[in-house]
Structures are given as structure tokens and as C-alpha cells.
Length: 142
Ligand code: DQA
Image (tube, rainbow, N blue to C red; front, side, top):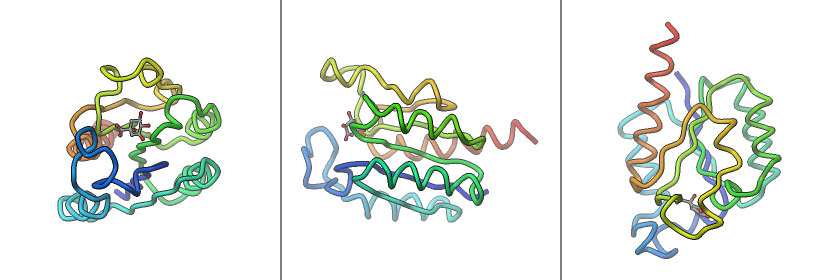
């Protein structure tokens, strides 16, 4: 089962960016660790809303599911919400930090209602758990 892992804005700076919140590992180090656990993964990162939407659209043809950390777009991108609703494959929303325990504006995810489920607050393990959640969904469908 091929899975696309999409990371949105500012996540390219993981390791440097607010390490007390997001940890001191780079996105590459996290992706490498995920890849060791599951070789069916492909990784994409973009700081642009349109590119994230294009990658969601393209994934519908080739992938069984998507793991998406939309960064701050989570909180206001109705366009990403619509892109998720436009495709049939499941999308799991992930966040390194617990968005419910931070700033007021982070408490709302406008993409959550379009996603199969959401995982937040477990650092890099949020991605691992999201991959397990997709595996569970694929198994349940068999
Ligand atoms: C984030 C949480 C968002 O609120 C923030 O804008 C990010 C990272 C997370 O992974 O915890 O860029 O998605």
C-alpha cells in the first residue's frame, strides 16, 4: 500500500524551528526513520498551499492514503479541506504538537472534518501512529 506523507509550511525547518515545541530532529531525519519502518512511503514538503493541493489531487491516482501535516494551513485553509473532500483515499491529519493545548487559533482545525482521523501531540511518533492508522483502515476494508 503506497502512502504519501505531506508536510506543509515551515516544517522544512524542523530541528531549527522552535525546538522546545517541535523537537530537535530535522524533517529528513524523521522521514528517514519513517522510511526504515515502512518502505511504501513517499515524502513531499511544500510551503505553498497550491502545491499541497496539487499533491493531494495527484495522490488520488497512485496512493492508497495520505498522512498530512498541513502546518498552519490546518487552521484556515478551506481550499485544503475541499481538496481532501474531493478525493476518495483516506487522509490522516497529523501534528507534532498538541494543537489543543496551545494558542487559541491552533485549537481549530478546518481540515479535520474532511480527514479520516487526526493525531496530535506525539512528536515524530504522530506520523508513525498515522501510518498505523492507515494500515488499520486498509485491513478493515479487506
Ligand atoms: C503543527 C501545528 C501548527 O499549528 C503549526 O502551525 C505548525 C506545526 C504541528 O505539527 O504541531 O506549523 O502542524
